[in-house]
Length: 308
Image (cartoon, rainbow, N blue to C red; front, side, top):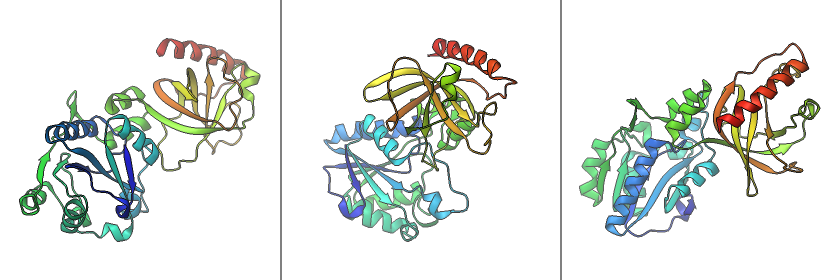
């Protein structure tokens, strides 16, 4: 997959089959669009191109209420490559770019720059200044500018419309299995292992403390989760806790992410871990004693082993 950072770095691709959007989460609805793109590209001997934006447009348009994201840009690009997109154009979303009209977007970007052969958009997609562009507007412009147009209808799972908003809601409620069913893949986060207080080691459950710097990425609800942990070709089950560790932590305003990895892993400090959430085990609990916490951790580990 080839990635173009900015309009000025774009190179024309053969018979471009194009879609555009934030694609946060790359969920099942997004995947339906991607699969259709690939089908059309195969039919017309073309290549797929996905246009996305960084940062997320809402952080620029509504800075007082920024959206918490399901993916960092790097995570999104990894998923798009996994699902078989040929090219990704990342447009820096600025206040100036937000003033681009829908006709300017169509004429200057889709037609003159990209030379779009066919445009595929998701259900109820809007674009351009003040989201003035619509499917109806595109339908009027397509024959004038010489490209074809197709709209993909909403993707339903058990009669629930899949959207990034609904994925976020399920994530904040801790329903990780519903999250993963919406995504069609496991929810993940990445972070570097940093020094901790080593209380897990004292309890017999040594943990890797994950330093998390993606302030705009949404974390699951506090609690204990069954996860897969990957780094440098290694993969193992793990028991992960997100929260403030109320039994042992005096700083209850600073949440932590720590994972007990099952198996011998050696020195992890400074290494980046990828964590894939599979099942929620329980809420975070304030125990009366460290012994009570240790007993619960034993039960949690067994639950994790049986869960994944």
